[in-house]
Length: 190
Image 1 (cartoon, rainbow, N blue to C red):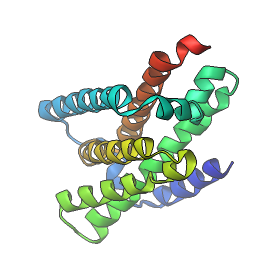
Image 2: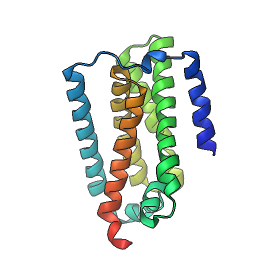
Image 3: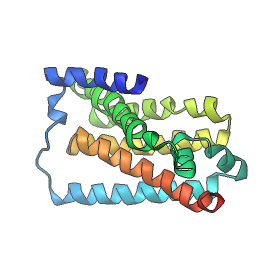
Image 4: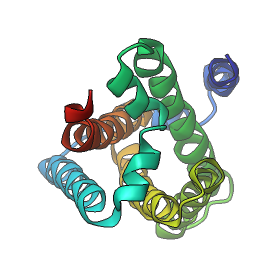
């Protein structure tokens, strides 16, 4: 309920024209599409490498308690998969890309590269909450590093496409990584 309420509050300023340039799809050229596809491939590859080489047995055991993976394992909390997980992606993109990046670029008129780096760094530091949840350094560092890279990519998408494609990309990449982790590590345990 809290996440749903927060998303609604985040959406309200959009109706008043706040950073409306990130709502529309601008002119796209072939190079933008190539970067988009390459970014997807690279992030998915890095995610697979992290799940294969960074997570040890203890980390994997703890990851069973992650809401998305647990929902895939138990198959009894479909609400997490169809409502709360997508709302979390929407909330994160609105906060860290639409508003934080928008404030740096539009209100503060900061340079694009610095704005993208700062918003991605803030996004990665936000993921320190995984330490408090799992108390595992491997999981926390994996989330911090991966979320920084994801932040760079979705910032690129926001600037060159729009917020909706940024949200969609974030959702697809995150869900694919969680699903592959589930399929590779936990599916046989069901």
